[in-house]
Image 1 (cartoon, rainbow, N blue to C red):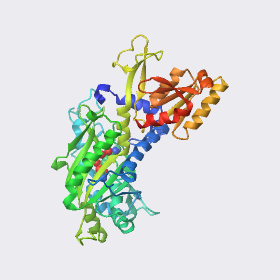
Image 2: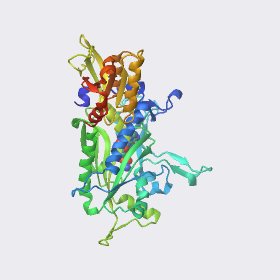
Image 3: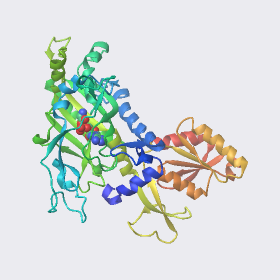
Image 4: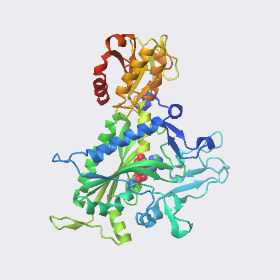
Length: 478
Ligand code: GAP
């Protein structure tokens, strides 16, 4: 089912994220701060699950090469603030700009290259420049890097930058890694971390933020093999996103036109997603760039350090080429939230029929009620199992439920809920995407079985307590 078919509304998603503790506006009690977001208890868990899956796929259990050997990829966690000369060398100080246009009449600011996507704040809303009163300035270049000062004195010599991408920390450590580990070309270095961009117009929830997280891997290879590896990583990255449970029809590739290529890039393709706010168009989720030898050559020139690779077997000397899969982690969270969100009609008494997609704007038919359910892939769900005593005023039920909960929470993040009608407790878990619910009832006291409920089908079955962990484990891997 595509995002369009499900008619995800960004407003509904933002509201659920706030209500249930996935994502909050940063500094909300002070009125917020544009372009910054805080990840709440469920949001941080979801983000960590995506992050860990990427890390596992890249570093701990990397893909196999054409001979069935695992690729060599090592991890890194470099500093957010680096010597500012690094950002001169990388081209960010001189060229990491967006063109910006201001309206002197209404004081609004727009990105000049996307002006058709904006609305003038006057009502009825038109495109910027379409009112007689509009006074648009000529486009001006605006550098996106956040500046700060290192040490007690604030002057040009102490100016430094918050990194606008994690990639450069990898290039700065390329020589360290070659000198201290046993990697040989081809190899990769992977890093996950915060990046900061003073975006002209942050918008669409966390899609374009001023503080966000990236998952980047620089793949160093022989120049003759760069195109082969570009094709390899293109296929691999799409496979990974699909493996998170994203519907194929909501993902696509888009090759960059030559005039779109970043200053460092020989070729670039984006993995794009059908966001509710871009539909029917797609928007960027990850960039895959063939960076040639731009970065290492620049850093060699600016640092005076030799960064050429010497092949120990052939004695060949060359500057490696780099293929870079650069994914947004926080943008990935948004995609997973959009993809998981569903509104359904379900039988009120939990009987047959099962869930069916809700018709937009209509009321559920007799005997049915609406539910919102986050259909996360089980491996990404923030909470894996919820445990419910059928009644909270029966101590023996509560005790048995606690025992089951204590067993399950040794393996997975679990939630214990004894408040409210059982139907309401199921709905609360559906809304945060918990794949399994376990209910302990009077039968449990007699025969040591429980009810295991599946979030998506809402089907319930009796399972022996001693088999519960194995059943849940199998279900989470499905
Ligand atoms: N090292 C290359 C690089 O940084 P990029 O296309 O500018 O390339 C990579 O960024 C990814 O980082 C994007 O595909 C997107 O997912 C994420 N990203 C970039 N800017 C962002 C922003 N302002 N807010 C959220 N995510 C962003």
